[in-house]
Length: 71
Image (cartoon, rainbow, N blue to C red):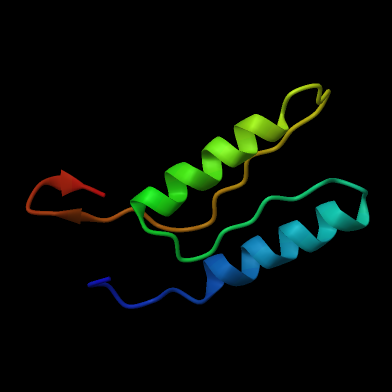
């Protein structure tokens, strides 16, 4: 919320999602998620893994450190 938005990670995520969908993968996406939304999305992804033979978790973004704390 307190950092300038990044353009490339969203473009990267959309490109990877589109490529995977073209290959027949079921894709779970999320953009600009806060911590709670990120946790919910990863839990949703994990639930959908049941019975899967192949999975891919792709994260596009950047970390941030402020006052010695990593975010």
